[in-house]
Length: 463
Image (cartoon, rainbow, N blue to C red; front, side, top):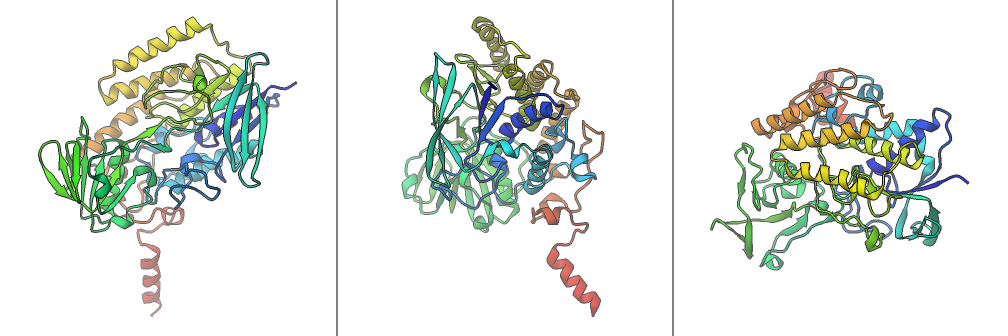
């Protein structure tokens, strides 16, 4: 009988796994039976924008943290698929920092071309997983949300690709319950429109705090203040954005900070990260880790050390994204097919300890980039995933960090060459700070004019 492979999640990691098997099927090779379960109504994971917060149509917690006006916060040349370039998808050069709809279109392009949708059951939530030591198989209890039906499937291998940016880490500060304005986590942020002319406090010093803060500034907030716990983001902030030490407590709308300063705010956004949360897994199978570059208990960052037939994809803190998920998926595929041998536990543990020790030695962002570059290089060396110039990608990342330090409002106007094709990115027709429309149609228009301005000019010309 064919092996049966279960995949939980059809976001970028789950889609990478489906694509890894599809690459063999396209060559005429036999692949296992694969079933992927996705609780949303479409693929893409976090790249699915929804106006909803809290719960979705069928009462499930909203998975995505995507928001309006989100543009890539890193060069697209650093996430390009090795086997599917931006040139192939769009047929022409585009800018290095496209908006969400454009990147989502690119993600979909590869999987639409491959035809992997047939393996995915949408609107299906994993409820519980167990493992039978005797049969060496997983039982997965699932809910068909549309038909309100619960059923069980049996698998030989299980791949968890459900991501780790959907369960908010929500802190508490004394007096927060009496704050009179809006309080939310970045997970529920859907755009800066509601913060026009407001004084906004963001708690956190992560990429989400940086990006949401800049977006609020761009779209008309009166002021943006970022409160950091230990280390500030530290870029050269423009007038209207500043960083202050840790928030201590609230007195009404008055926030008190650890340096003794205080300020009144209209809204608070907690940019305080996410939890690795797997409520469908029993304790002995559950990955327990903070957000870091190399989670413990995962051999090669993929194979669960206590149960090698269980694998996790995309659980690392990330500089690299899509191409790292690919590299992991190709390794998982070859382990399942028997093309790669998983060594005994003592060897796996020693290998993990080597990577963990090195990750702890990282001191700078450049060190972290080099670490993750070498990690992906190690994975690619194990499989037939198409190689690409990782050193140039690393150089792009390091230049990106410098660009942000130089001007946090203009770094998205920079351009980079593709590592895959050598094509130099185009300048977007409008500078990022002046571009208020993130739609696919606007992005690919050939004019700096907004649709409204274009219509007005056409009317004037006709007169």
